[in-house]
Amino acid sequence: MRLGVFDRFLLRAHAGDHPDEAGLNASRRQRCNCVGCPTFNACAAAKEERAFCISGASACVRERDMSQCICSTCSVYSELGLVGKYYCRPGSMADWEV
Image (cartoon, rainbow, N blue to C red; front, top):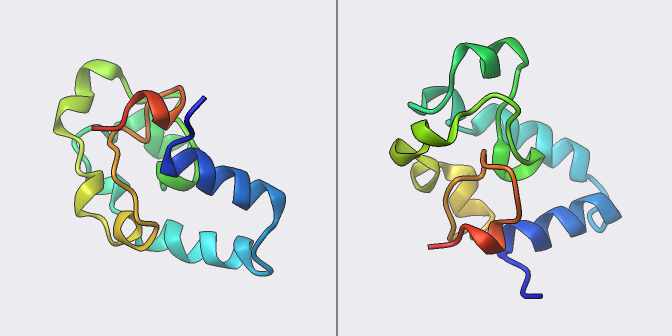
């Protein structure tokens, strides 16, 4: 199975490969633009979901809303060298890269 950039990042993060991964991720969460995305809804806001490229899929974002995704305009997206879309989408990014 081919792992996408997102999957490899999550594996490193969960393995603790970086000594300050928690601090880096807190900073990334603050800089992410998820709350400005058309897919971000009241449910995601109430659950304080954001930085889907780091934290994984949303329990709230609806697939029908995802056509307006703005992940590629985010500084965190660039920082991580991501190439896919729909990080709020359940499933592996290997299945969603464009």
